[in-house]
Image (tube, rainbow, N blue to C red; front, side):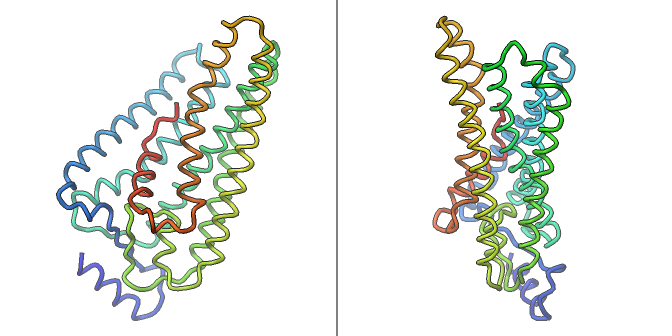
Length: 295
């Protein structure tokens, strides 16, 4: 650990060469006796998460009865969740059992880019799913026509593209910073504020960019979700049958739970500028975001 820090210092004495800068993760180093138990717990959760997400995708793929817009969106939500988990988990597991706690600058930026893309894509796929439920309840007779395969594909593609655009923008602001010092990050992954903490230049513009992008995405996606569910509730209460109420709400319950969890954690991680006061909370929130089931 000390040798890694010394190496970083000697690198930066020669100038700010971000390409050769190395980050050193503290991970859960404050709990030395829990390294092996945490590894076993996280490995178990990671394995279950991967099997669950891939299993969901496989079941939807092979069962013709599930070839509907709702399950099409759910399969992509599972895929995004799998990608995010696989982006974050291997390095965390490695940090818990291997002495080498370093990651190259390029590797860290790549991890942030793909992780951020997955998070933003997941946010908008959840919004798309809310719109799908709105069409299913409000205009059930024309549901299959309104939610055509082409429209579904465009909505999902738009979510991926927008996630990539936002992630590329945030990555640009990270690359614009200068990095110096030991490169120590009190985290187990390349989260935005953790990377900025290793910067020796003014990061106010980068922080502002993160806040603007995060709030814009949150407001837009939540506006779609809230509007959809307001119409859903109004429509459901017009149904005379109580059985109809239960059936309509049962299709929305798990989706609402996923929305609350996803947006709550994103607000915690990306809309709070001063995360240093709650590092443990941020770490565990990141873990459960990465390994939470999308359904």
